[in-house]
Image (tube, rainbow, N blue to C red; front, side, top):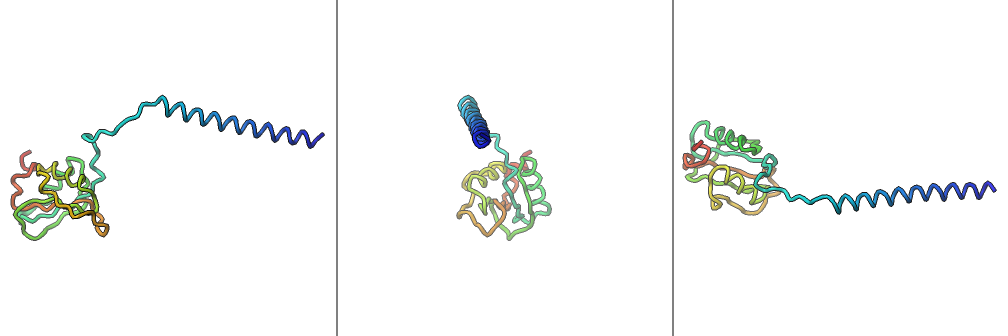
Length: 145
């Protein structure tokens, strides 16, 4: 008789656990079926995850710092600034990021998409995008503010 009580107790416990599993599955199905799906708005995307370095190739003191401030005001994460060899035009180079990341940065600077240089992502570089500010820096959006 005690063997049948034990088996009845185990059967009841298994039924309770099975019932709880069914309730959880029904809850998941109901919330998935009746919750509206949302699509992220790309216009209001958060650019703070895009890591940028800014290089001054115009030879103007403090230029990289000014461009850095401009990009940070627009939500980009500028993690490094410095100088580069002299260059006439400003370019945005894809490093370990995507071409879309570089286009966002170029757009923030008022540059056309043809100023984005892509050679494919580089896995040996930790930053997403490099901005090299050339002698045409006066045409950038940061100086029109």
